[in-house]
Image 1 (cartoon, rainbow, N blue to C red):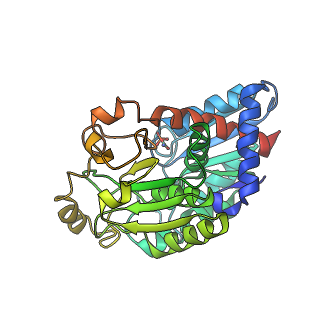
Image 2: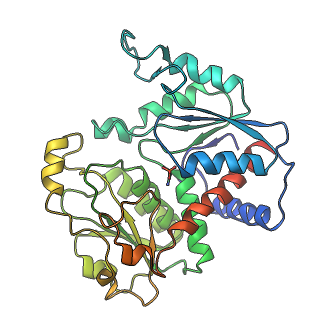
Length: 331
Ligand code: CP
C-alpha cells in the first residue's frame, strides 16, 4: 500500500482485510515488524489522538517517528500555489515535503480545510499537491474533506460492538460555537455507507452535507446493500437507531462566511446531545464522537459519562487500525 488517503479508494474487502490485520496485531503483537523504519508526521493543525496514536503505533511495531509542526520550532511552511513569499513563511511545501519524505519511509500529513471556498476544499487541492510532492507512502491524517484513520477506527468500533451491518446509523450535527471542517462528517457518512448500514444524516437547515459527498456515499451504500437519507426531524431520525454519531460542522449554505454561519448557529445551541434524545431509539443505542468534544455544548455530561458513550474505545481503535495501515505499508 502506497497511499492511505480515503476509504473510498479501497474495496470493502480491502477494508475488511485491514480490520482483520488490526485484530491479528492485537492478538499477536509484532514488536519488530517495522524495525529500522521511520515515520514522518507533519501537523499543520493541532491534534491529541492522531499525534500520540501514530507515534505509539510506530513504536509498538519497532519503528520510530519524527514530528514536524510547521512554525513551531521549524520554519513556517507556505502551502499556496505561486505565493509571493514575503510574509511569515520561510519555506514552501514544494521543497519542505520532498525533503521530509527523503528522511523517512512513510509520511503522515494533517492539513485541514481552509474553510473559505467550498469547491476548493471539496477538490482537496492542498492534499493533492502534497500527494504529488511525496515520493514515499503517504497517510492522510485529516485533510479538507477526509479523515480515513478515524473512519477506519469507527468501523472497527462498530464491529466490536456487534452493531449489525444493516443497523440504523444516525450522523447528527451538534452545536459548536464556530464552524468546524467537514472532514469527519464526510468520512463518517462514507464509512457507514460502505459498511452497508441504514445511514441517516440529521442536520438543521443550512447544514446539509455537500451533494458531492452525499452522492458518493449513496453509491457506496447501494453497492453494500445499505441506504442513505437526510432529515432535520430528530425524532424520526433517531427512531429505531442503533448508533448516534455526533459531530460539529460548519454551515454549507454560508461556507466561508463566518458572520452568516454564526447567525445561523446562534439559534441552535439546543443541538447538544442529551439523554432525552434517545427516547425513541433502541434501549442500548450507542453514542459515538471522534473527539475532541466540548462537554455540555455538543454532548451533555449525562451522555458522555453514561453507558451509551463509546468515544474512548473509538480513540483506542485509532491506534489499532493505524498499526494495521503502517504494517501494510512498511512491513
Ligand atoms: N479524532 C481526532 O483526529 O483527534 P485529534 O484531532 O486529537 O487527533
